Image 1 (cartoon, helix red, strand yellow):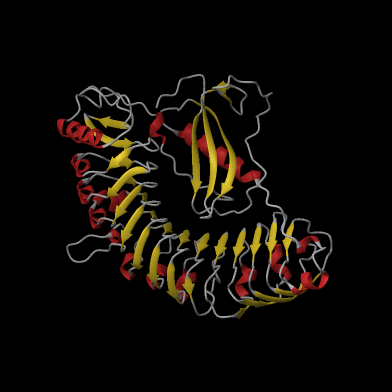
Image 2 (tube, rainbow, N blue to C red):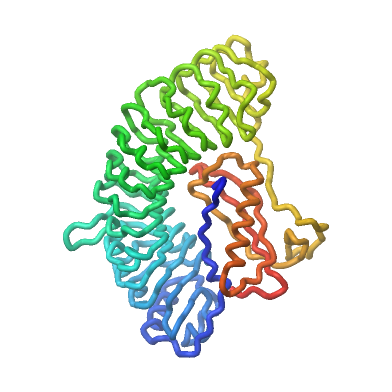
Length: 491
């Protein structure tokens, strides 16, 4: 995020589709089979004609089901092979239905026209079907392949002779497989120079082995999360070929050898290399070259020496976490530092003195350094600050807030209505300062532009964001309210 905020929105909830023909009999059979196997299907899933009767979450064209969107519906059951008979299906979004369990059916490979597959936030188990790699539209048109936050096991499938695999999805932009139970090595074959990936997210799995050097061939890559696995060995030297990367997360693995050389990766906003087994090293030269950094986290990485004053001058720097290292000498932040700098955490190092100019007044933590052992715990930087997360909420837009009925909410335009409510998840944020209101204002503007640009002219009055929090996975969550205008929005 920061200067640019990438937002993935499915606005199908607000779209109207007029269908005159009866639903194709094969599609009716498939949907009725799903209805029988699932609990908590929408109440209006009755009648014999899903398209003409307007079943919630079902979008049709020319009597065929082309889009299923049933996210956050509380569905329970399994994803059966009956889904494979929906031969015209182009998009499937069943995200955040924790009650859906069992394996992903191999017959999902029969959906030859599928271009969007979003199955995040379930309790699916078993392996990733190789057949996903055989979907022709996934290979050529898929923007987002999201199987994150499930219980998927086994290895990452790649092609082998007549068996398809994920390496065939050369035009896919997003590989999201975080928070599963995938194991084994990341195959060399998974990546190649003709891929178009911009996000590779495998955080929170059980992957072993090293990072394949072929990853350095994917020059389009912008976000890489391999943190919280059991990866080992040295980080490939060609990693810094990925000059478009803005977020790099390699923390909580078992990497050894020298610190990775990030020289030339000038677009980096967020770097986390914490809790690995790198060799002890001096402050790396690339520290002073990453002028776009908002967050640098290198806890327990054995870096040593005295911190250069230039590190604090990066214009966008918000958080510096260098706890549990071998830093020593004098800490001198100087009088010219980033105006966005909120936290400098240098706990448990060997810093012996601090040049106090009075200019920096945000959080500085030096507990566990000789300077605090010598001076006692009287200095502010020798005590842990109280955790605080000041709430954010969208402000009214040049109007006087009004008191609404208890079942309604006031919009930023000071109108009472029944908003659509949900949670936005950011699994690779480029910032760490949750108090930075400019980020949320930019996101609100981006959301409104997305609604206004929709060809159906969505009747949205305004949007509001509130209560940003960061969870243990370093994901940021935001409460979203979408307020309808004078027209009635239909889901």
